[in-house]
Amino acid sequence: MSSFGKNIIPRRAHKERAQPSSRISKHGLLEKKKDYKQRARDRNLKQRRLKILKEKAAFRNPDEFYYGMIRSGTDAGRVRKGVNDKEKEAVPIEHREAGMRLLAERRDSGYVGMKCAMEGRRVDRLKKSLHGVAAASGVPRTHVMFVDDEEEMAGLEKELSERKGTGSLHSGGGHRATLRSTKKAYKELQQRQERHGKLRTVLKDMASEKALLSKGRRVLERRANSTTGAPAVYRWQQERKR
Picture: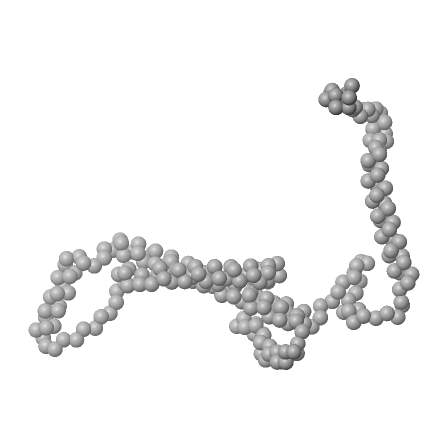
């Protein structure tokens, strides 16, 4: 029979021999070749790493010095790098809220800028929708009218009394409902404006952090104000472009 015919005929499935329960309870599962290969590969990798580290320790210069050693140290055998002056200034100022600091640390400036733009567009849409709501809600307003004589004044009073009698003004229930909806809309607008302002502040903090970590001489023009929330202002020295 050709090899093609041998491949068509179903072959017997060779199953793994079962291990005695007495041996499993005493010694555990018997290690197979694939388990041994995985364990040996892991051990050889660790041995190579240890060899490289021993060579580095043997050929290390005891007099070597790097400026990063000034602020760095070891903690439980791990090297902890210190924060330099630029990084300390680049960290968002302490009076920021915890959520704003977390957003500045975990997100990039592109994401924060996108959210800030979205919130700004929502604020603009709310302002446009609320434009003229106070005028249409029937809020009492003062309208000063000037007359020349008493006859014109009497006619004006009669016209105003007829308006009230015909019920041209809004009803009480509808007026209250309109006031509630207007108050709710203005409250939402205020909340969104506050959120938009916070996002703009986070974006400014991230931009200043990126600028402080860059090269170039700078002068501190104004320190950060913890009461008003104003960030520090720096002025970079102008450099000639080659």
